[in-house]
Length: 256
Figure 1 (cartoon, rainbow, N blue to C red):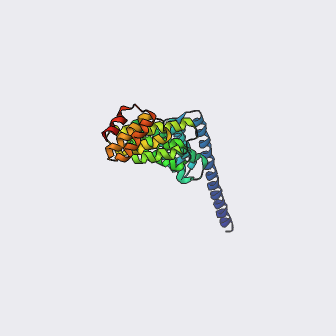
Figure 2 (cartoon, one colour; figure 1 turned 90 degrees about the vertical axis):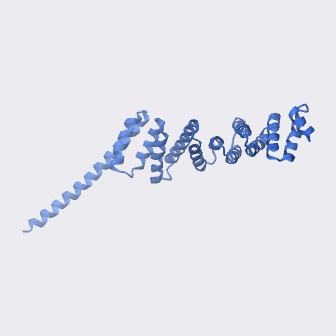
Figure 3 (cartoon, rainbow, N blue to C red; figure 1 turned 180 degrees about the vertical axis):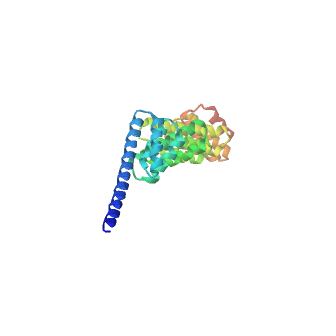
């Protein structure tokens, strides 16, 4: 009779050990699949890597590295929507990991540039605004956010982003790019009859490029269109200081 309890205990031990071995085997299998997926990723075999990663996620939906590698594979395929979806899941599971944060930034920037090129300005704004919050010291995020706002004709936010970014631009080349975007936006707004928007952008531009006669002429025109003749007078006087024979400025002043 004593053999039955002993047999039961032995069977329980076998079951427990079997379950433990199965768990270890499963974990080893996931680690092995992760290593294989990473090797495929490094070899730029993105679809094969994604197949491995899908199996890992099926077995362990909380395996954040699988979502990270998945986002990197989608970036390689230029599939920005899927990259963002995958990296956001990784970020939920490992919000402080440096690789996750770096890949999130890359995904946001890539998605923003893609949307900008397609003319999907609202989407571009969303991506770049989030990128700026993630990387507030990166001037390129502000520049592209400004361009996205210009595309959506939100002159005020465009000016704010471009001015903020200009203060973070580290060299003359970058500052020139911000300045040219302010000028382009100001001209665009003026041509569309959005005089207040033109003023917002052009008055910031001439702070950076104070010797640009044509910009002061356009700024003066924009002030006239808004009914602010005092500021228009100031702008046209500045034009004549730099170019005394400028006909547009002379006509405005003589007309007064």
